[in-house]
Image (cartoon, rainbow, N blue to C red):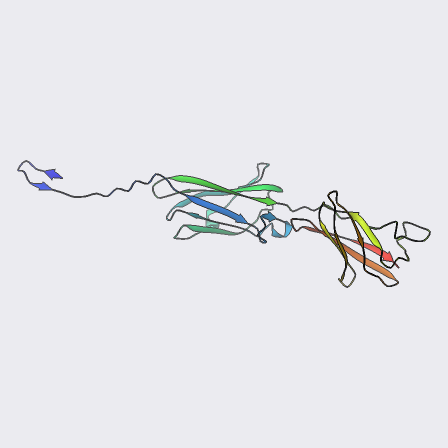
Length: 220
């Protein structure tokens, strides 16, 4: 309200909004949704989240425990009017295996800044799988010639601890499966095989979904 020397008054109003805080969120997911990025998913992770409407995303980074990091180009971030945002198919191949941390920093129109973080595990390596005909199944004069009269031979070997091991024949039919023990050892007795030479494929899949394959030839 203003009053001049003659006593005349005039009034106006002014609205002021006090805004001292802002919020945001972030979530990184792998293709299978189990929060573990395996080798086949290393270039297909998605980042989603929300910032306050009309905010600016200052930075979005992903880092490993060894100090390596990826900074997402702002042009690759889809930021919607309601504050939701996403980044599709992020390539994590340059980061080391282990826990990865992703963080977003945003600033709202009042100048308030905040940061949120999320984590995901990267596991892209599986121990090499070995295979051999078990001595108990390798009949005859030699324990190393892989010739046997046992029509349900036992294949043994090593792989990553607790991995799932599957044996298939040349047609791709599953003929045996087992779970490796805590030390990575496994033994699988196959279903009956006919006389002749058989090239068996042994595939190991670890908890993260990474696979490794080897072969073993057995003659019945």
